[in-house]
Image (tube, rainbow, N blue to C red; front, side):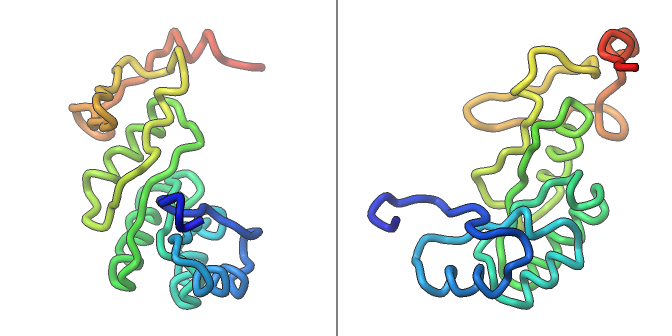
Length: 159
């Protein structure tokens, strides 16, 4: 892989197999990024303790929200492991949370995928995100900076 100058390999083995992740990490020069092995602070701590990753890919929803995501970022920073943010892809509310997390963390390293909102042609928030030259900006305003479009919620309601 090294001749191809790949940024990183994401989750090369099933979640939780920290021994294999560590072995792969020690055997290749291409950085190993984990995401499915980090579903919260306890998982992140296990990965960091095992020395099983060069990067943590943090998903706000998978991590249990903004508080847990921020904790994982801080734990990784103490361990000297950089983080990125991933998307599933979320609608505007989830994207706003991820973008706000990104601007608040000092241990964030590009490239990230914190812009799930760009995968959709419609949304349930009124605001549109500024995405330009590979960057996304947090919406301005209180809280996450987004307001719910109730008509859209009704239009997309199932059941």
